[in-house]
Length: 419
Image (tube, rainbow, N blue to C red; front, side):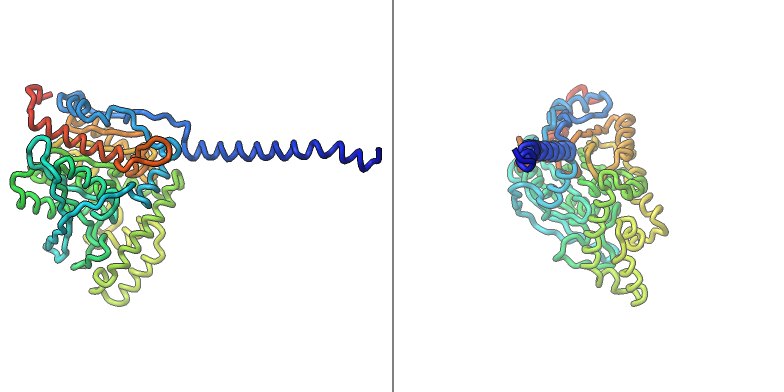
């Protein structure tokens, strides 16, 4: 046998084995990354609940079964807070309905024009009462967003009238009528919508609902003045951060890619502001306009936009003052109506340190229930078997289920009403 033949017979069996080993290692690495990124090993569980043991809370938890049952997200991707958030943000809800509403225009004292969409119920409420949900969407959102449309359609079918605030400046086809747009905690437009509903429907009672930034606004609105709680049966806040001042530091961290999300939200805010540049900056000098726009173009975070543009709409002297005065953390303790606060542990936008606020509140006040899910992302909460989510989310069912329980409690007025 020649040396050449010897080499062939000794090397060739080893090469395929080596390549097979590399392939297996590559596959194992990819599977490991997938399992880690999708959080596949994470268990499913019922929400972690903090509440005081009162007759009302016992009734609510018994009647609203979603709060005590296991929340099961879609198997393949639903345990990733990032994918839950991205699916909500980009794709909206599955098979989103198109509820028919009437747009209302409300002139404000400062010349601004608030708008909201009014959707009548599609049937009688189970209690036979007139109940209106007054809804405040998330940052830069409005009644035409998929998640709002899906929720409104579901609530309508359960007998609720729905009024959805369109954040000032959020609708691209509605021009601003004053040099001001929505801010993190301005309650003027929401208060105007609620006032209209109370006047137009003197017998209706209200369920207050806020999503993300909207959660901050509705809790601040109710706590600013106890008169705002008149005819309000309860309030539900989903995925809010409670304190912008505390949140700003966490938004600059790369943990859970919050800094990246911050950049994306800042980019969206830029587009909204620039779409209304003539209304917002038209009364300023050219030099001031150029300076404001220059700072806006170079901003890479919400905090920079808030400091250079947003705080000035209400004359706040500093970013710290703006965040302090517009955060509901300073008002929420004044809310006495039943209050359900919902957050997700894997929400990439809301840092865990912010959740000490609702935890402490629920431990101190008998009217508060704080529900923290393991999964759900930011306003995701999709449910489903393996891959495809259901049109309705766990969040949709919880809000309507909790509202139904509150209405039933008010209707029956059990003798154990006092804890």
